[in-house]
Image (cartoon, rainbow, N blue to C red; front, side, top):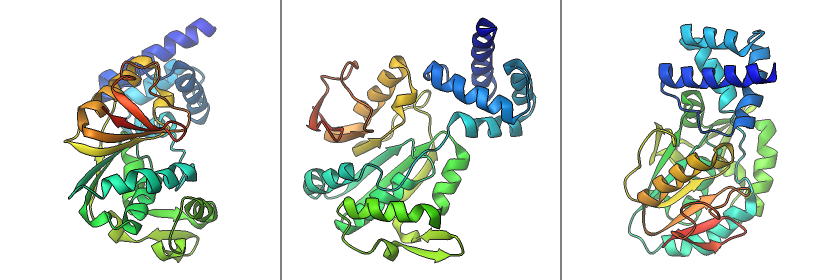
Length: 271
């Protein structure tokens, strides 16, 4: 049975790639399997093959499956000490550039984008920065564009913001309406939201900083190396790369191409 499941899973992933050009073939097997089995129950399918038949013939069903395959788990100012380190160690260097380009790869529903925009505004850099916010999930991107988050999560975000060295009242950045917080549209004036896959697409133009946090943990080694290659190619000389707390450049093909600025906070510079 177990062997059948693995075969069916490989066929499903291949079918998704051939039909919809979404490439999950180099995602970590265990995580994809867990998500597909969960989706199978939600779709009321008894086998992965039955699920494959549904998504092959029904693009809407595929979009629903995509929500399970790219579960957005994010929060604003996640790991506040990371953002505090950006403020203290990275911002002074960014201030020496006349203009900035920042790429937030795997931006999910936009929490990281708004966190970065708020930090840049407080440091006087937002007006001269272009931010590319990319993800493979169109629904997540749509949500990110809207900038509407539940009031329930705002308490945690506020605490993160304060620990990250926030200089104002967090409430200055949003309007509360019913059970939602609507973030100030001006934060995203210079943000371009775009569909982009680290598995199949190429690089963005020369960037000064790339933040790709908690995305690579879902990739196998090949795909991690592909992503690091894209980041290396996209970054300008001495550009910054930020990773998630469980991610590292060590043991990758690019470990010698970057130097740690703050290893504990996963902040690196291109050599």
